[in-house]
Length: 333
Image (cartoon, rainbow, N blue to C red; front, top):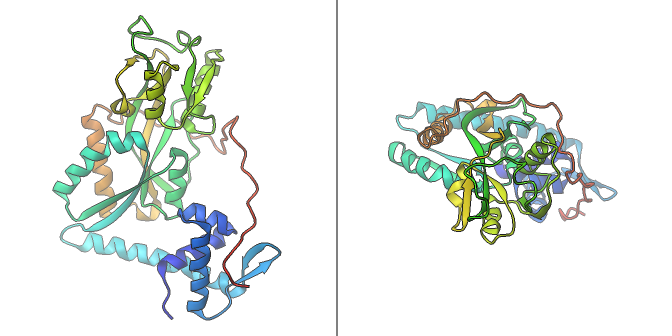
């Protein structure tokens, strides 16, 4: 019997999550690709692993048995990888990291250039995800590590199965159209009458800024909701409104945008998250150290205490989760 680790990982996630759709989302595949691979796993094993109950797909008793063994097999593979890396004279490994635009442009180029020079055997691959999705992808095994965010007024809920290393502490600045504000520094109150360009409330960034508005007793007009700081600043350059931008986001500033110090105390902590059982992997820790060193060289040393997490915190105004669509496919009859 030839068991594919990738298919075992899909089986494990189906056992954890209960639907093909949730499994595909967790592992960043299409639902049809997951269905095809699980169907192939059933053929590889030569016994029935799945059954339909209504429109739902469920594991048979043998499917559950194999899923439980998959947990052990995948954990053993990870331990073996760690042991080989630590035993070698030089570190050779592939590490997959979750990123978003500002860290990918502001930190990774210098960090990975240095890492390639000092440890050429470490290959870092990146996947761009929304900041809100990266920690879950690490927990589920789709990524080895990822960047995560805490805002000073909105810390994230932390998964106890993950460890994190603080990388940088960023300030937030006001980004306004060139020559639109005749001052060298502003507060949120000063900008309250301007139209705003801001991330949606479901995002950590969008919610943290809205909380800052509320704390100041403000209800600004938000004309445009966009996900990326680079997009927001392009709209600022066109005179469509004002926004906030982080230290790392400043590298994405286009012509026609003035950056002003923000008098309101609002910072965000950038950390790297990784699974607890991989915390000693030599390659992973070398990647973490290279990125942390680059942040310090850019004046963003992580010298601030992490805000306390909020147990079970939710984002007011966020789009509620929709019921899971019924599974289709797998072709198992």
